[in-house]
Image (cartoon, rainbow over all chains, first blue to last red; front, side, top):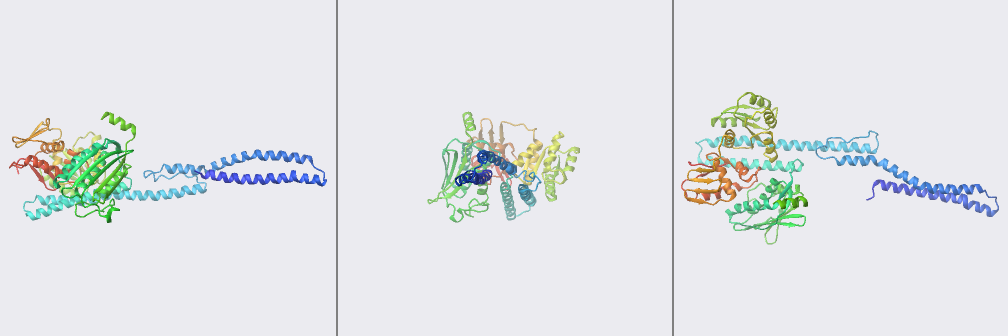
Length: 360
Length: 224
């Protein structure tokens, strides 16, 4: 890569060289060509001048490395504040955004640049602060009325005089309040995740164990609709991740595979070790994802069909969990109406991998 | 039994107090964290229901200060956020239990009762409710003279329900106790497992033991 310093130094060197060549040419003409001409014409020669010319030519050549070296040093000194600025900028994250970068106060271009950066990060900091405040308070503000509604319904349901029909309505309200609370939780989680406020605790985790556990839960979830669930391949793989979040991810995908299925359908699960990745596939029968929403299936509130109960936030959360682990996720329906969710997670690094496996 | 309710939202506080009162508790209501800390240190409360968001000192800081002062009054923490981190943070601060909003009043009462029982309970190895028994050593269940085969999850579920026989186990408590999930997985997995367990223990018997408490959870009890 050509750094700014190298580029400046090269241009500087080119200019110096051109000047030197001109200078040498001029000197050559003045002290060598012209005396020779004078000699030919019989004009008396001045010997001392010619000797001086030779000495000055040598000095000029010797000056070249000195001048170039000096130039290199000068560039470095001039550009040092920019390098320092870059280093300070590298230290910035959401946490210390409000700390201003040190300024030289000498009013040069770099100082001006630092000022602009400081103004920019102040604005960013206040936006971050607003998002943070919003996500912290939104949940509280929304949950408080829900808590009151729930409490009132609970009190109402204690009333023995309620007719069976009224009781059913009140119970339906309880379910809706809980559903709304679930949506508030999911939305707050997503808002926080987007703002970078959720930390994922990563430790070495046996991914195959989580998959096996999820498979057992899926068997039970699938039983009422008579759906056949298989886990043919489950290779031992170790990933670095947050156990709770990974379990949430798997249950979410498996639950979808059952919910968006057909009676007597199938769910096929497989976990493979592929190079540097753990690849999980969950394939299910059913109607599949309509092509109209395929592109946006991971977006909030986008759902394949409204016929199945859900709020359309599960896949957005799934995608966040996968990305927070440095993995990728795809979900698509093929020509034979099979829908496959494919998750690729980077493996935990080799040493940990070995260690845990010998112990297990 | 005296319970202190500390909650900044007036309506929620009054409903909590009303529900606890109807269950035989003597309740005091406060809205401010600093006042609450003072009251707990001075008054002899048997348990505290404490919201995190408060006027003055917040709930987490109240618990932390209490434990610092070696005050061991059991604390049930309430929070509007319901996140894994917050739950862990609350328990680390010294709270004894944590409940996300919105909650069922029945669940608050069940958890307060559980806090008061804590420590004084002996854990028998063989649990019995009517003619249903569960041996937690051999992991075998028996209904009358019929032996019931249970999977590992079903065993943990039945054990949880039988250990709190006669009391409600909320969906949340079941998710925590059986699956170790500290978040709502947004799946009806608990209900599906309960259905399966119900088939195994109640099918073929006139006396149904496993009951659904709509909107809250499940419980095992002898009578209707």
